[in-house]
Amino acid sequence: MSQRGNVFLYVLIAVVLFGGLTYSITQINQQTDPAAEVDESRSKIGANAILAWMASAQNVINNMDQVGTTTDEILYTRPSDATFNTAPHVHKLFHPDGGGLLLKAIPKDAMGPVVSNPANGYYVGLFSNVQWTPTAADDVMAVAYGISQAACAEINRKITGSTTIPNVTGGLQSLFIDVVHNGGTPNADFTTANCAACDERPALCVTASPAGSPFIYYSVLVAR
Image (cartoon, rainbow, N blue to C red; front, side, top):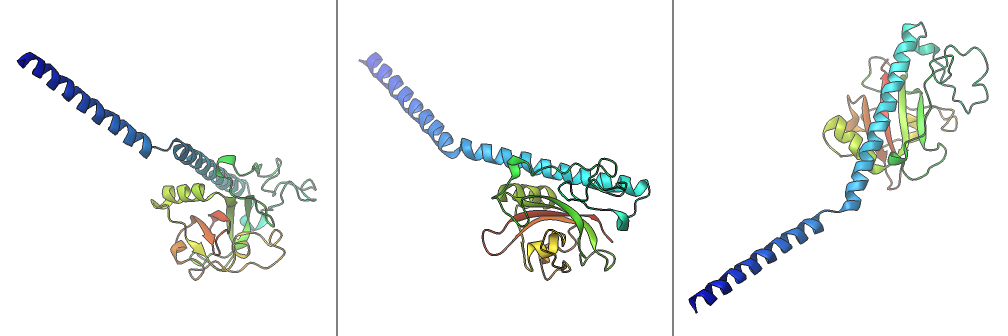
């Protein structure tokens, strides 16, 4: 009888342990969302691609300066512009015979909702004067316009350690896109009144109110 009792006790312990293991595995599976992990991985890939393109833009401008093209001489003519292949080309940022910067599309892993006027994409130019740069001259800025919220948050995490995305007032186009691509409206200065969280930030990902506004990453390539 004693042996049977011991066997029963061992079986009972095994059942309890198995039940606990099953519960633990179930909880882990419930807490792990494979789809969320994939989305997070994609946003990191997209964010890295955007930062890499911005670094290449910075390098091209630095190289142009070293061979004699001043900031005031740089031409931001895009490949889609009618005068892109009109000589001379030496001062054109995107032309193979000038700076040679490759104007890529926003990576699919970082693409936000489709927008127009301007379209999702990279833009570089003398967009506005940033308040915390040395002078009142317009600064050379690069912008990734219309990226995903997830990629935007990941970029800020890399830059600031926080995924917070500040809101900008005053209009994204009028601050961050050149006059050709924002309807010819002269650009306003970018000040702390537009974005207090942007103060002294040469690069940051931001958006605007109302909800549904594009997410954009700006980077001051030449602070003047």
